[in-house]
Amino acid sequence: MSVRLPSVRHPHSFYDVFGVVTVAVAIMALVLAIRYGSIVRLETAVFMTVIFLWAGWAIERILGESKDRARRQQQRNRPWK
Image (cartoon, rainbow, N blue to C red; front, side, top):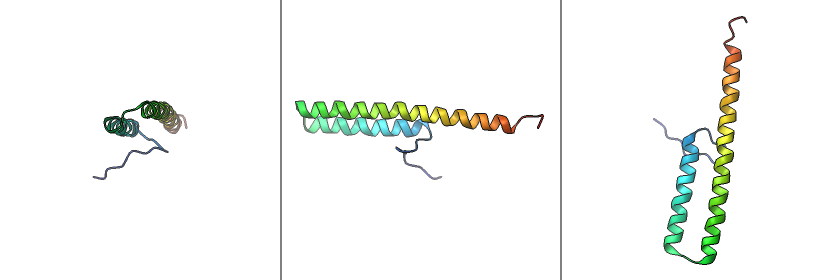
């Protein structure tokens, strides 16, 4: 059984999105545990905003690909052709 790492550029499933967001939250928690200041908090807020915007984009992409795949499969399975 091969395990694929989460893809940032080409997310294919929920697990890609979940994996990237989980790693980002863990990194930010570690950074805030080590250093805590107003600039660090601002950087953390900007980074997490970027991560959640990416997650929205990734979910839209996954759903769009799923819709296209379902449409192609439906066209292939038409009984009158």
